Length: 251
Length: 251
Image (tube, rainbow over all chains, first blue to last red; front, side, top):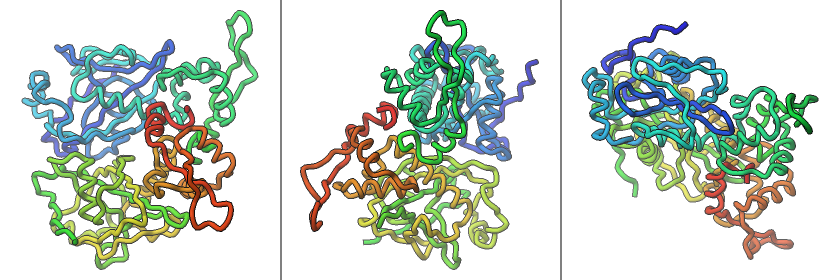
């Protein structure tokens, strides 16, 4: 059942924090590729990240959750703040004026807004995103085959990807992007997609197992003809320790 | 020569971005200890981080630089955004009401403000911080021996320290906190101070040298009686590569 969509807030709303927005970069993983969820604005060819304003009575974390739910239908997913974007001119307003005119008229648009970026990690197979009242499409795109993005959303996406790459050093990124049980080649393909480089398999397996964040199970992958590979899972307790201790390099 | 201190902005100022502030955590390193620069509020025993508001005509990075200069006299130092703090009630307003009454009266205080946190890394020996018009002291404190901090500044400081720890995995943190040439034990003591744990020296030296971010010079430390240790320096180009490639663990 699709929930009712709430009307968007105008700038005059006293409960809204002026000049502040949140933009979300939603990552999924499928067929060895990193995917991004984008919204297509109604009556244009422009695509953007799901984003909106922050209310006085909600924390920014709560706002990010609400915005993602309102704009894409996604809920109960891993969300993490990664960077705040605060340039004076974040994008060329003139180039976007036509697109924004109806928003500017309805008092829905700030010439300057600081945007807090959140990234979300979702299991690609288990989500069914929905467009909202401003958009007529909500679709997964391959990171290597993106449409032209509105505003500074390409920069926001790039920064999110960069953060994800660096946070592989201490966050259980794979835990949210892979099935609960996975093979070592599956884990490696995910890391390669995020790092955008080939990794030497033997070295990778040795290093990852040495840290203790991944545990080999007494189980092999089913449906594989011969030499079925072992399955592994993340040890979240050990990962918590790594996060507190200073990352994988210092284990 | 001390520069003139500009008057603080009131909430009614149209050029100010309402409900938004910046707080800076300034780290230094001295005698194997991590140090923090704190300001003491006039006529109280309360200490706080240097912080202030953001203006419409400046980026948040420019604002952070300006604030640090206005409030402590520090300039041209390494500054990095690490987290934005956006809880609805970030601290107990009632407990702080006496302290804040003159600011609330002068319309200088928001009940709710979102604060963008920046950390700064400075060479402890080369800075001479100055207090501003709101504070009567500006002092270095040992991370293990802090006074009681006002507002949620202890949480902001802890988060900055946590970020610093994790960023050791990919940022040339030591480059800004050590002299240009250093010995391996000096580097290790810095890492131990940030990570707050002992590191095995042989393992540390081997791992760090393997990444290539530190280079051994054809020079030994002077003034050491016998078995003078070799000097090292950071290879910033290599560090840039590590940052782009995904951190030390993935080198």
